[in-house]
Amino acid sequence: DKPVAAGLGLGINVKEAQGVMIVDIGAETTEISVLSLGGIVISRLIQNGGRSIDDAIQSAIRKEFNFFIGSKTAEAIKKGLACAIEPDGSSMQICGRNMVVGLPQMMEITSEFVYEAIKEQLGIIMDAVKTILERTPPELGVDIIQNGIYLTGGSARIRNLDQLLQQKSGIRVTVDEEPEMSVAKGLARVMVDRDFRSLAFVTKEQKYE
Ligand SMILES: Nc1ncnc2c1ncn2[C@@H]1O[C@H](COP(=O)(O)OP(=O)(O)OP(=O)(O)O)[C@@H](O)[C@H]1O
Ligand SMILES: [Mg+2]
Image (cartoon, rainbow, N blue to C red; front, top):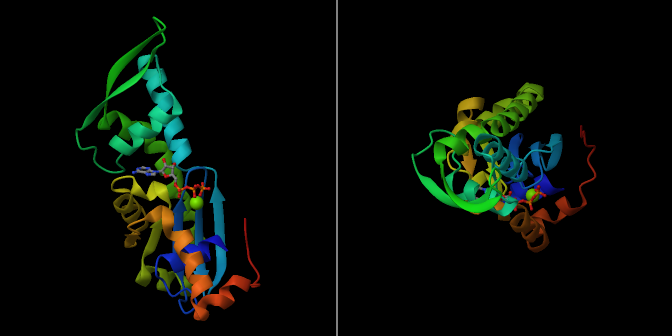
């Protein structure tokens, strides 16, 4: 299972841990999972992630400035300027098409603008985490509070996203240094590490929703 692999990649001993929460914010989706003793207890997949954040930036720029940018540009803006808490006052020159005159142009985009544009998408992800925490059995919840929440996936690189999640959940958040690699690293560990090999054949009952 992907969340179990992610947990291993994060260096968590998922086989022993009573309660671990992993929030994997990828490109197309966000997967929020609670693991216990190597199996998935609760997992929820929502269709929000890096891509929907890019789309939000693209449509905010179109609406506000009548300026069309491609999705690659939107992603570059996100990587350059997006932050989840306080925008830092930085800005960027971007290329696009002025839709009024129909010509290519440059314009400046600020981190404040991007912050406002992506707020709603980040909020949806935060709310989904809260919902899962509310549905987590209390005995596991206590363990999650002690272990903290593990934030992973490429979109975990959005600046201060860990802090936002920490504020919203009241639980300490740990981010992997190479968040897009957690699943791959975990799979490698399953293959190499005898101790974890049994996890490759997990047959525990799972509750997906
Ligand atoms: N520095 C960065 N800042 C913000 N977002 C980033 C950064 N680097 C990568 N991303 C985003 O991370 C996402 C890719 O993450 P990841 O590789 O975990 O996705 P994936 O596993 O391929 O997708 P999914 O899990 O949805 O199938 C992309 O949306 C990308 O824009
Ligand atoms: Mg992924």
